[in-house]
Image (cartoon, rainbow, N blue to C red):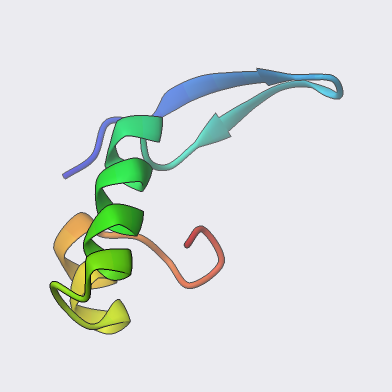
Length: 51
């Protein structure tokens, strides 16, 4: 399970469901064709809206 982290942006502070490192790993796997989008989302517990 992913640990939530705080994200500071111009609009204030918001909670993200996944870390930046997890997002990067997921995008790299998808770009490399390692797995399908659905498989990567399930692996990293990423919702459709967050990916």
